[in-house]
Image 1 (tube, rainbow, N blue to C red):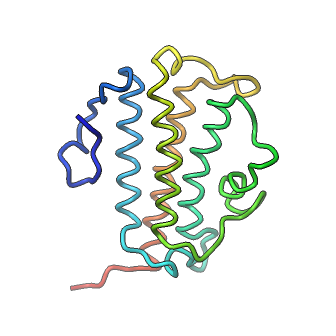
Image 2 (cartoon, rainbow, N blue to C red; image 1 turned 180 degrees about the horizontal axis):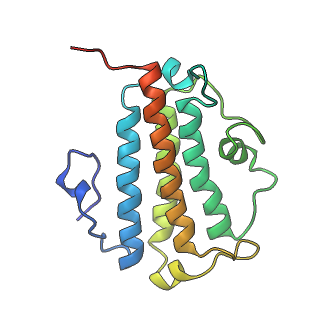
Image 3 (spheres, one colour; image 1 turned 180 degrees about the vertical axis):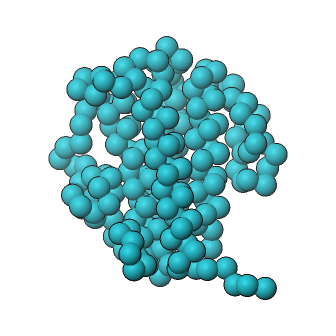
Length: 182
């Protein structure tokens, strides 16, 4: 059994952990995958111009939010898997995390394929590392100085953050690419 690749798959609507994960990590991976599929659906077909558009009254573009979602995965990889904070060499991650307020801002003019490739690459590293962990690790605290949270909360928060920004993406999309009335 493998994870769903589209929301049209019946598999997308069942939380049935793949055998390569322990039960709780597998359930978390399934939920993270469903959240990602809904994000992909929300941005399907957008042009580069639409991805870069910031409608009046909004602070970010859909492209910036996609870069942020990938950066949040990367930040928690650094914290949870490497046991360190962002530092020298992490300017791109910091730029995506802060939506351009610190570090190196994500570039504009990136097409959807480029943004989705980074989402896929960041998540692939998370899922590959999850294969090497167990439910005991998931319940453990992150390394200091992040030890006020445990791994399960940290990875749940990544999914929670993505769902929140997916909602923003849907609102932005209504402003920049409204559906034509039939």
